[in-house]
Length: 212
Image (cartoon, rainbow, N blue to C red; front, side, top):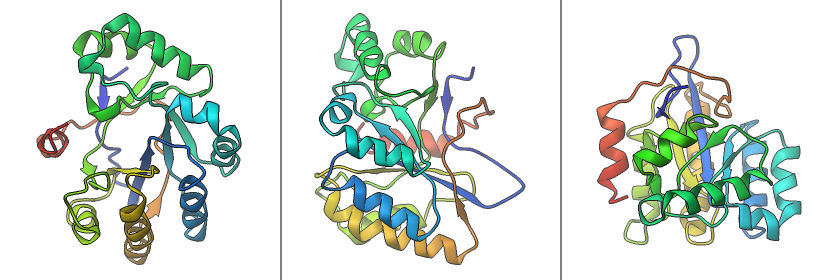
């Protein structure tokens, strides 16, 4: 199984892969689901286990709507600051609530030893477009431009169904969906089956260029 997936290249169709980190929460996630439904869009939700524990009904809404879900650790742990054993136990605790072979490390931070172990069990999903909706220093317009100026067929786009990102997300998500739907794009969930990743230098630059 490949270590990291940065995008999902395809020569057959124009497809984008919207992903949402850090939920589910009742203040934001149901609105995201409703907005996606308006465009018949599917997405992937990388869920924090403790939020699933607190809001199981919201998590079930995600599943019932036909979206993919992934493991985002139980407590949104930074892999760089967490010893391997505690990190693995935290991932496993989340796995008790999320039936998925998709994993995204919070902050994009994961140690080589953590990667080596987790890739035996998960497809580690990264991204090639980071919206920046979590960043209080940028405007909603800049957040939108971060996506429309960089996303292309096969891109994995990161947004957040969190309170911190809510204001920008409510501005950006409908506009992203409308813009790309108008360009003939479809929105799908990240596939759980193995695919050949294309580690792009631009993807790495975007990832670490945000100070992750």
